[in-house]
Image (cartoon, rainbow, N blue to C red; front, side, top):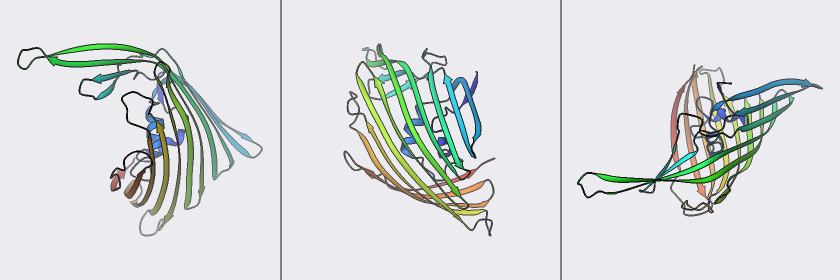
Length: 274
């Protein structure tokens, strides 16, 4: 208790953050699925057990759930989450994962996450008081009742000398029983191959990634229609020496639903890790 930890579902997701992420951007499913989990206080049990020449890794955690359970809706149409600095959520979150390593180069992972929270929407409306420069702000709170989030995911990682690949699929839902239910799903595949390893430079790596993500928010009042995108990425990682990398990436984004946006672009990043 009292220690911050990564909730173990899709525990490899931290590899999609600097400095572990091979590309500059992170795949969209990991942003949605991992950010909503947060890091929190709790208890975690984990271990590894050899069985018949294979290895099994297990993780299970119980935490005090997200503290970000108040949504602030402002009169200008914007919204934000408020963190109270205390545990405003009496519910508990559970997360589990199980990994199978039939050979040392291959890891297969399955995970499950569930969290509940009491959602409160607070509206802030500003109006003129009749005195120049002074506005009156009216605050109203609405208790939307319990919201449940459940996410299921499977992933596979394979490393063979200079070649490695990883992929995963996730499916989940966010159910605020009083007014809506949103569904999310997505899958991702990434391949990478290193060349010039320890020749002239530390290494040069070619990376490709393909991501599909669907987030059905059409039933949520006030939000835009479904988010549905296909993202393709090609990148080059140059590591002149250990602990230093330069990344260059081009990303193509296609909206499967709604208007097409100009989201394609080139991204550059330099990373130093310790």
